[in-house]
Image (cartoon, rainbow, N blue to C red; front, top):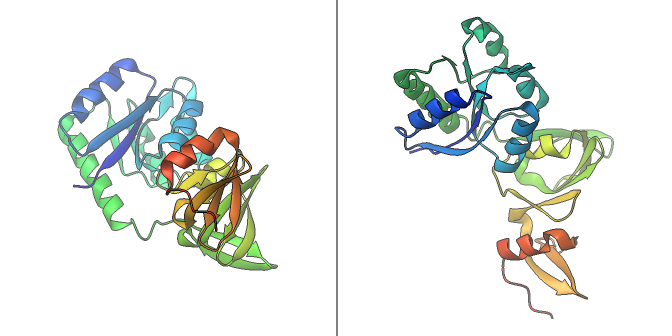
Length: 238
């Protein structure tokens, strides 16, 4: 059974409770967390990497569609609202489904099945790819090509097997489409693809990770502990 890692975004406590109760009947739903504002939602999407959101389209004075507009590659979304007239706007965001409050359990089940089909059918096709400039040429970088991601203000540098290219994006938006732990954080501005790491070692009290191409990257003190817990045993000194 396809697992649905869900983030619930709604500022109505009673509605959240109703949905939590309804989710209990569907073992495929793994509720990762809840958010009640756009700011909190963006933070949790970056942290938890859900593959499906249940999004209230009216968050106080905020428009739920603004969340989808702010993300370059948002998770799949099932909209929930008390206003059925908002459905037309949802078409531009390719919503999985559109549920009107109070949510009927049978309709919820239908929406979840649609999400599962979308995730199963498009898992390969939806893998992120990025058009970047390398040596004054536009090059399409596939997710599997990326070795490192480096943030520089409103730009991100992709270090890949095809070369190093720059794209206008925030680090947050760049990482959002990927499953959790695809990239490991080495410092405030640098992430490395986990599948590119062959090991780690200490040198003069500082931690370094070694990539498959033998490149060594330093790890900040703040992130050293999590890297050690996640990666392979240290390499022996030669």
